[in-house]
Length: 459
Image (cartoon, rainbow, N blue to C red; front, side, top):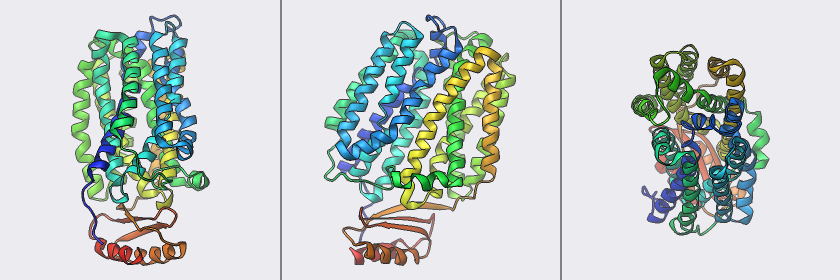
């Protein structure tokens, strides 16, 4: 049995198309972060920072509540239908927010935006559209798109605000969502077969196992805390930059651009070192500690512009490292047969963190001042650091997937035992219903050819 090393044109087209849809949607969420707080203070009710925080984080609540139902619905009603429905909700929410003249109207729009929770449906369609051996690569394309989109939004948000304002940004994101309809229709090929994928979708029957796994719970608390701190920060950071650096809303990108570039340059070697040297836990713990220092630095620097810039640089270095390592840790520590479920819980935790951080950031800023927001975030990150320090060292493995064809459960069990006996194989799950073998294998030197031979003999 030979393994194809390259994606087919159809797989590549589907991966690029779905990554672009993910990116367009995230762009709509992220673009307002660096500018919304300063805009909202001029709206009726916008002087209340609690309302600003709620407007920023509101989409996280509906997104968290609806991600799993949308994923299940995509199994029943079809991937593209659910994606169309979610994009329509997102567009409607964007246009409502664009036309709103009060902070309450924008909150309503953000709630409806979040209700277009299509992440799970997009992931499922990507799994339908790619062969097992290329799925990790395709998922990485989506992950990379999210990171680049967030970084670009910090710079583009203030730039766009100069020309079209917040209503224009909301309108633009609504139009982009409508454009995404065309990408889904004509840019993403219809899969030949649509079915459940344990590596990419949430299986309700496995939720209890995942929620009881203390290693995964530490990571879920981590992503919750990371994004709670992120959303809380953007309730107050635009005000702090204006007050200390005399930077109006149109020019704050002058801070974000160099900070983001430095952060990306420092992140890359840290990730490479952690993954290739089997030091991912050490890099991870160091990044959480750096995030704690960044939050404390923010707390004591609210009256000092260059102190804010220094703390912000450290924040983005740590944030980028953690955003990249957390999904990798989930993949390494989750059971091979429940990776999709583990990622579903992880994504829901992230969305809940966005909502919680927005609300708490607004409340604390309104009643106790800017520094209180970062002391709150410091407490969250400190709790995460303590939890992360006790985390089991993740095995230095990578995940490989293979198509095994139509086999019985008895054959699947036998193949699983034979694959598990190969050198460099740490864990095996052969899922007969899906015709797939999922292996966690050593980073270097595992016996891949013998695995291919065994699979070829069984198929």
